Image 1 (cartoon, rainbow, N blue to C red):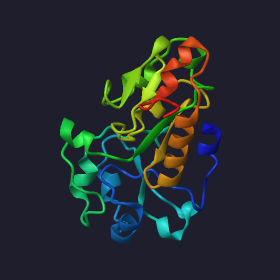
Image 2: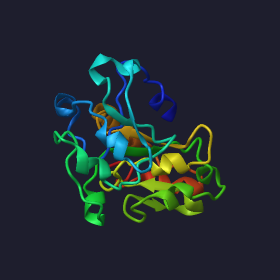
Image 3: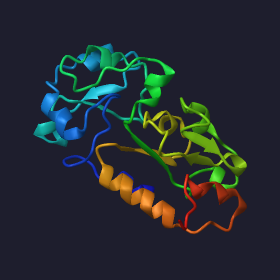
Amino acid sequence: MLGRLGAQTRRGRKLLRPPGAQPEADFLQNCIACGQCANVCPNKCITLVGLEAGIEHLGTPKIDARAQACILCMACTQVCPTQALEKLEPTEEGKRAVKMGLAFVSEDHCYSYAGRTCGVCYRACPLPGEAMTLGVYETPIVHPDHCVGCGLCEQACVQMPQAIRIVPQADQTRIDALLERRRKLKPPASPWKQGAKWDDPPNR
């Protein structure tokens, strides 16, 4: 499943935007590509898009979570001059208001789903126990209603290729399709894969 997540590249791909980003169409209309968000980012996770993503995205901010994830400091939202990034406070409430994307786990690549305890993604999560919980053998269970899509789990994943990836909020069609596919999966026979149920019973 996750192999397809990395397949959409270059032109036409959906980008992971900084926290507070408006819906993509509004974001592109309001962002003036000033680069202030990237300049103030203390984690240097925000970079500016080049021509590889198409002229409409040129100079706009993006995050490559695998390389450097968002730490939810909200500094970028404080300096945006056009409200393309909604101003958010660096508080627990502010973190929970973020919706950058949604994390998806590939059981085929995950150490814990293979019966080898890992759990590094859970320990990297800024909202442990809410956005992510653990099943048997520390299998990660992502809760879509609470995951903010910061990408800290993806950056922390020790597997190559990574067993967990963020699908940007702008790619809602893909998010919906993956969630629907997940809901339709039957419970796996292996005891360490019982955590793959997500929020809803698979057959609901």
